[in-house]
Length: 302
Image (tube, rainbow, N blue to C red; front, side):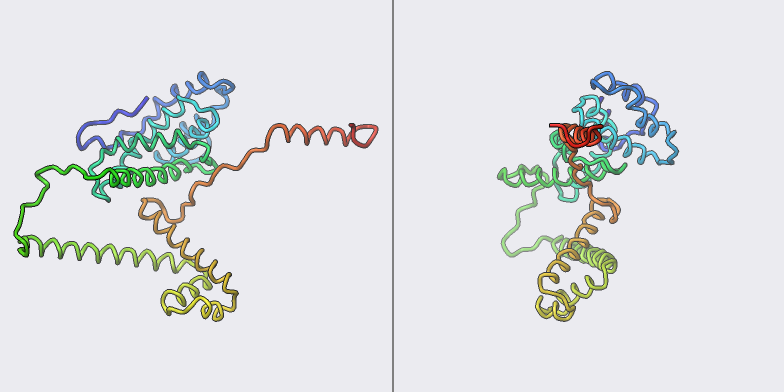
């Protein structure tokens, strides 16, 4: 049930989202998972066929379906659900992996790293929260980022890496610069300047979205170079409260900037851990208490 990848440069091109072939595959969930009937799958069919009254783009249909399927996998560990997750999101996620590998100039195969991504999806389903329709997209993007960084760290700890001989520079004498050194230095400086301006632009944008008190606290500490004690006195708050205000303000800016660099909208909230469910035993106990309280004789039964 895995997606059919192409070869060469076309390997990172996601095939068209085919809705006509998904219905029979969704029906396989009811045949594999005990206790799940076709009626339980109707919300998935409604999303697929657009009969639930919501207008969605093709990507939004994929996100909503993936979130529902991931919730089934979290509850039942269904192999059919996991295969559908791979089929729906494999081509999309391999593009994210490839983009991150290019950013770090890594020669690793994006499809090998993709296998690690889905291994983590399979390993940590209990951390998934399906409260929002795009929950799987946000959650999987976080897994992609962490998996790529872990892969790069493991490569750096592995010692020397193999470099093709064609990529090695020509040997030069000591003190003699390559003719292209000046051009490379200029291009590097220009690229650093562009990146720095981008960082500043994003920082100012999200700084302007902070509250007045948060902006004033950041300005006193980072621009005016005031001590925390003097800044707290200026704002008329306790020193501990000032530290918390600055911490939360910096975290808001950092999270918004990180989502932009991850290719996500800056206002997308991260997927939270699912709420713990009450044990069945406690629910039965509460029912027993209600029934004994309403006993005709009054009072509680021993």
